[in-house]
Image 1 (cartoon, rainbow, N blue to C red):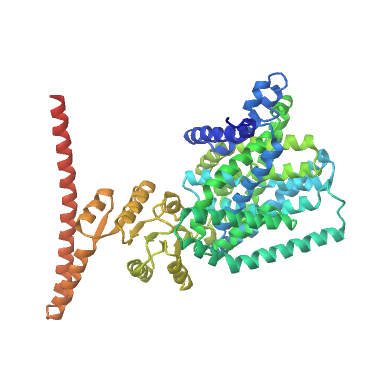
Image 2 (cartoon, rainbow, N blue to C red):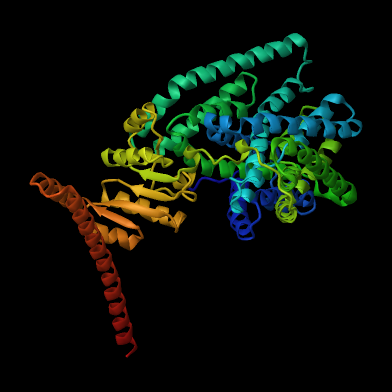
Length: 600
């Protein structure tokens, strides 16, 4: 007899997966951030949406999220994974390059916007602590929407992109302390005294020291041991284990789970595994963030907007305008001209996803009245919806403003070579090391990737820009900056590996120059067929080097030898390319004859 199944236990996971399968492709096609789709679905299918109809129409229960508390526990890991990936991207090199913008512009932006918005919120909130938290929450902007919008416009490396990224980075750093403060001031917990607050701070400091100390000692050997198995499944399990353990250790110590994961990400950012870990975590982060935004949408009371639409839209407009003016005024002393300052203000003026977290936590902790908090959640959501439109308006406004002022050299400096990856070397064995040395000798920015953890660790100790990862994964190539790279050099020694990397790279960047190592002439023809610009067969190259050595040893002038070797190498290259074209032509002729035969 078949065991009975409780379908309600699977209702919400299936409903969420169906939502993700529909919302993400649809909004991607419409060029709208999926974040807005998840928020809308949460509001529509939550207790304030279709959930209102359940008492009268019980069957609607199958189409609604009926367990907000259970969903919120899973949704919390969306923020955890987001801060983990932010920590991974936070390299010390990037901080040093943008330190003036991050800790100067970013700090002033958060402080001044929080003071202005908090002062306006003091009367409706009714207490100073709640008003400060409202001001801090609304002062934050949306990393999840602004960064993809700038990336789509290919403007992340512009002055506006760097200024926006720096402010968003500081905001992300400020989230963890804000959440810790809310937890310490939670009115649902026993009364907070000075001694209990200091004890909580001491516990937090000890927990941070333990996480940082153990992380520095354990993380690198741990990932080296796991990656030596060359098992993607085990590597994925290791990544999830690190996120879960650090976040739970932080939570037990009184910190937020997100802060623990963020610290783990920062520790991994200085290792050779950071790019591979980032790529592995991305699918989980995307899904769990979807759960998070759905859970936030479930707390949105859309009917409240119908009751007071003008008030909510007016407050949303006020928030954007006030922040935009403050950011415009701040950006000028940091070297941005009028057009760049205006565009940055419009991008950072709307609220963000962490404002939803802070306002929700403040309501749960009893620091912000529920009615006011619900209204502010709707205000924040409407400002986020406006980001793509404001980005286009800001771009048009920027083009119309003609007067240009000198830009701070620190802002306009080219991005770090490690982040751009002008040339990517796939495979760092003997051949790859020689290529890397030649690139370094000619001062060409580059990075290398390899699947041997011991080799990567050794080269990293020698100061080489080598990272652990598989170049056949498109996600990993994107993490290495394949879309901005000038060239890809493939030095791998197995036929299938070379072809897999060529296919993935050409898919991600059709215009990139690809130079690949080939086993022999036949393999070179296959690589040309896949789209490489130059294939270097080992057998032919070895023959040419032998010829060069013997000719010079028997007294032939070196200039003539080098010239003839180069000429012969070009002849071989042309022969291989012609063979590839002839094969394609023969195949096309054969298919044409076959089609003609069938039609007759």
